[in-house]
Image (tube, rainbow, N blue to C red; front, side, top):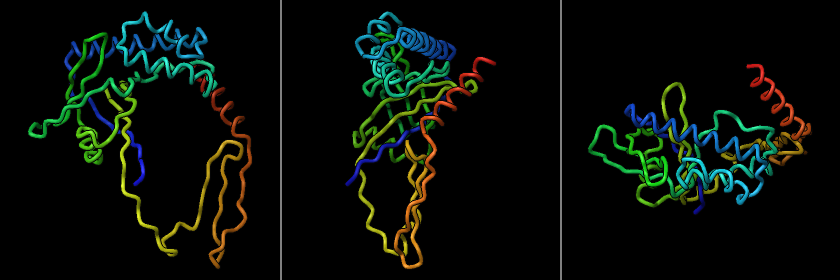
Length: 227
């Protein structure tokens, strides 16, 4: 057995005008709290808590922010947060209901503020039905969920982890003859086998990964400011 983690995709179906307004309120409050905590240089959960606690968000969104803002400073070394960050909820925040007799089978309970929640029907990715059913039956563990709007439609992405059977070992003829590793110091390392089946010396593309990330961040920041 081995653990596999997958991001499950749900599209919220026709929220009412009232629920759309509440979703926007949640998004706007989250963005404001994120920007404020980042600008305050919060690099610990305690420091982030002192900032985000005053915003009209559920505890699940605040707890996700307390974890995420220090990561932006300590791990991602971000210059500034994007304006379109999805609303994050910790794993306890979201709840699913399954009504297979209905045309729209899935419903998502989305935290808004304090004890107020929004139940909204959701259409799932059909290729992920087995995973959603496992999550609903507690055969998979729910992780962080993310709420975002795109082109006027609202979506939920849910991280799920479950145990799966390990695949049997492939025969020599079935094994992939080429291996590719994407890393930090060396961006790409490629290794393949020769005609006798022996691995050859790896070939490195040893450009500085950090320099590439800095360049990507520079262009992204410049584009945002020009817009």
